[in-house]
Image 1 (cartoon, one colour):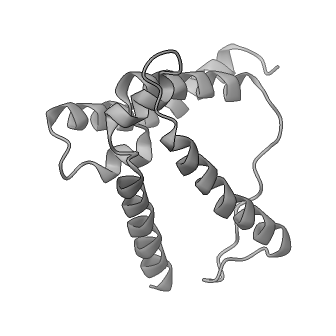
Image 2 (cartoon, rainbow, N blue to C red):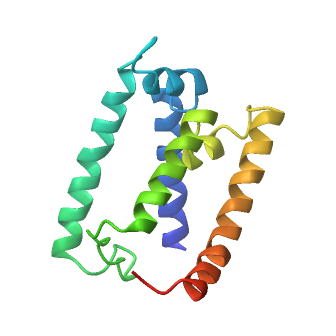
Length: 145
């Protein structure tokens, strides 16, 4: 039960932060990405502000192995730069640039986003469901690097 309460509080805080920072405004996000046009640098502060608590979380993770709820903490991500990371990053960046949304802000925007957002979220969820299946098929077809 405590885990669900913590998740609800963290999710509400995260969604509120996305809304207050403007990350749910597709025009603001696309303005940040338009470095050769009408560039809007304000989201750099949002990204910088996100790095501080994440760095703190990884520092805490290096000292502890269980969460406050007693559940094990996930391992630190790999530092290896491989084709999966590069391809995933490129796909994420292209989608973010075209739509002006990424997964967190799209979910936070569901209550007011309109039909275009619902199509985006449906496509995103479909991609999340299909990607592991496609990855497994590609891993069987092409030997590991």
